[in-house]
Image 1 (cartoon, rainbow, N blue to C red):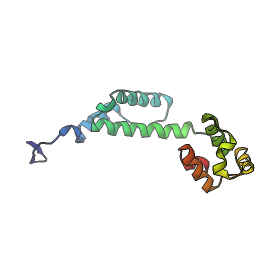
Image 2 (cartoon, helix red, strand yellow):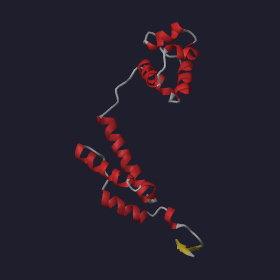
Image 3 (tube, rainbow, N blue to C red):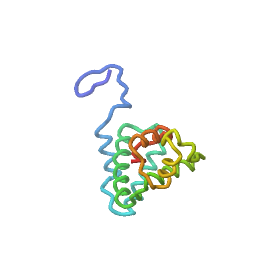
Image 4 (spheres, rainbow, N blue to C red):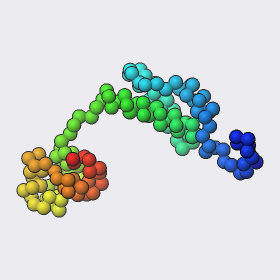
Length: 146
């Protein structure tokens, strides 16, 4: 029997229950904060690395800390290292190259070799229906082509 909040509970696996006191201690040792410099980024990445090295043995409190610090790193990187906008046809070319495909391999998506060529070369935009077919074909997000 285990006592939780004054009540007796039988056969409770306490290892998966979030403990605010343990989380508070982790926060005190990690001192997470909004990242504003490369030094702070490096420190946050070191904490993430230490947590990830534990593999699947993370406590619920460590998982919450990992999520928090990962969000802070992601926010900093999004602001300081944005991905350049890549035109959909360039993404398509890249996926074709990675999969050893030719334009003729995409005729089922575009319907004709002329349309396929125009899309691949950026002379025609990809329609929503074509984007959906491409996403299914390459098993990627449709947003890559829109």
